[in-house]
Amino acid sequence: MKVLVTGADGFVGRWLIRRLLADGREVYGAVRPGQSPPPVAPAADLTPDEHAQVRWLPLELTDAESVRACVDLPYDAIVHLAAVSSTSDATRDPGFAWNVNAAGTARVVHVLGQARRTGRADPIVLVASTAEVYGPCDEARPRRETDPIAPASPYAASKAGEEIAALEAWRRTGLRVVVTRAFAHTGPGQDARFVVPAFAERLRTAKRVGAPVVKVGNLEPVREFLHVRDVVDAYARLLVKGQPGEIYNIASGQAVSLEDLFDRLAVLIGVRPIPEADPDLMRGGDVLHLVGDAAKLRAATGWAPRYDLNATLRDVLNAQAD
Image (tube, rainbow, N blue to C red; front, side, top):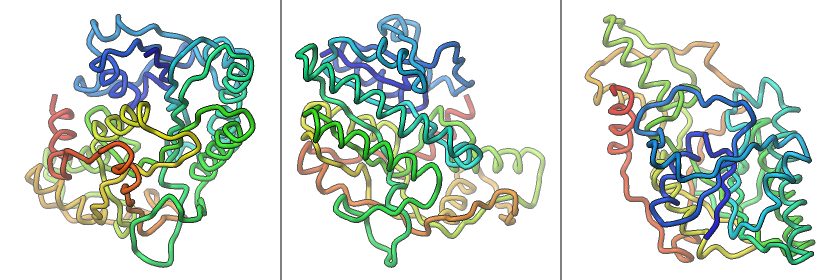
């Protein structure tokens, strides 16, 4: 199976490439031209052997010709990960987030839909959306794929646009689109724009300098935190067993408040500072409860998460220590 991974140099992309290579796939990795990946933990880096097994291609999602040159090849499958993936980055420039996430996806599926209509290729196209599209809910319960979406941030709105573009191409051209909505996930190599490595860095610093206080944002929201390995396992399974036109949650259903998450990390690091709210770390429109139901994914693929939260947190901390 020839598989193209867009956003191949990102956090999830690197873990997915490693999994696909282990499964014996022929992997093509699409990255932004001239983009240098940020420094990450060694556990997230591809080995020289893994890197050499991948055929690397340039891809600029805002450029239609770049998209055509990269994706108009006879792939068996495409995992579309490339995106503005940070909520804070999308909030700073919502127009750019829409151009990359929604319009960029529209460009990708347009080329692939044309290829299918002319018989040049008929790939399965896995589009990685996000659970953030669900937005707020009046009750604290696991979200299901049948729930309405109500994005409450520029990032979530742009990803909802991505879903619309992808599923429109499926309806119009028969392109075999599968949409995933992964709930919050972390692991070795995730950068400090995201909550788990951010908390870990601040707590490590507090321990090193003996600080009694650690600055935090809003600790009330409830989330779940999957290990990135479990997320890429779901992607790999859906490439084989996902049904076109369907949406699949990737979720553990195990709820944890950010306050509890902070406390768990503090215990693992061996420090007990007081969390202090910092207005600069607060963001408007927080969804207070975002936990998922993955029954549909389990039924389709047999998937189940293998890592519990403490094991996941220890993996992040061990990678930072390296």
